[in-house]
Amino acid sequence: MLCCVAVAAGVVPGSDADVASLRESLAAALEANECWERTAAELREALAGRDAEIARQSAELERVSAALAVLQRMVFGDSSERSRPEPATAPGDEGGGEPAPGGTGGDKGRPRGPGARAGRRDYPHLPRVEVIWDFAGGGYCCPECGTPFTGLGSDHVTELLDWQVIVRVAAHCRRRYRRACGCRVPGTVTAPGPPKAIGKGLFSSAFIAMLLTERFVAGRSMNSLVTGLGRQGAEISAATLAGTCAQAGALLVPLADAVTERSRGSWHLHADETTWRVFAPGDGDGPAKWRLWVFTAPRGAVSYRPRSGQGWEEIISGSDGLLRSERMTGGK
Image (cartoon, rainbow, N blue to C red; front, side, top):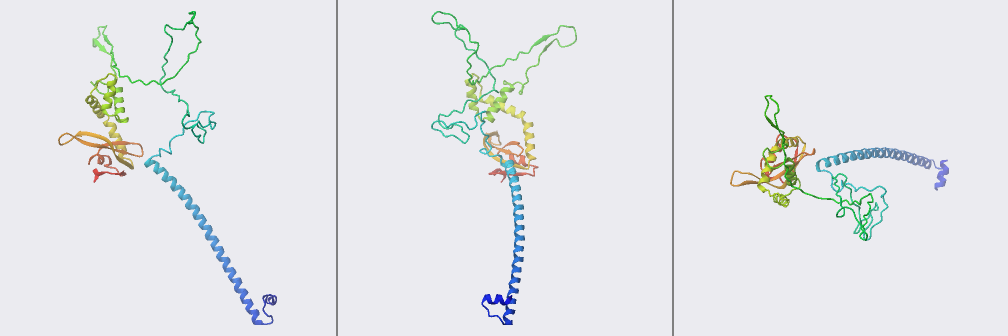
């Protein structure tokens, strides 16, 4: 067999030294082949281990990314652009619309652009008041012979949104009664009146609630409120409204303390300076002009304190949480 291989390779047979050399070469080739096979097996095993490690790391990365997304929503809140709800689609109007002239149709077939109509909204949650409109004198007569028209039995209804702001004087009449028996009880009694947030104040509780909402939620200035009330015939000075806000603020102190305590127990607080100015009594001439700080916690608690060296310290005193602020010069 070796002789045939030697002849095919061009080696002259008949020499024992050549045969031995060929045997050594073949043995070396077989040994090298076995070595390469062992190396390939080790590489395949290592590659399988790397694949398993990559799969484990991918699963860990996905878990950490999900946890990070939850923490980002807790700390920074949802993005207003991503969390904006899609407008509701009317039944039977999925994808059947055509673009209006001059506009482009979206992926859901909604007409867009100039001339497009999205339809009027319904307001079933608003109070509904029916106003009857009729001709002068009631009914209608033929302009030729004067024969009265007969009613159709149904009215033509046109719904309009009506915006009315009314400042009125509510006269609360408390009934009084006289004793009609001989028992030893008070001779006259008076029915209890309406509850009032401020004892002898001029305004009702609903008025005070509206005042606080317009002033601090809508952000209207005191001059704007005075002007708006004046348009309705209620001439009220800014000092009277400011005093009412101060008295109502004193009633909200327990609520503010509860909010502060809730914020103090949060693990993470955001602090930022607002544009609201505070005029508090100062040590020198005139009031101290501060600006409010807002403290927001992940659980939704919000606390306001003036910008001073002691305002924000009152919030974080006794708290082990993290306080984050862009510019907190009062703490330097």
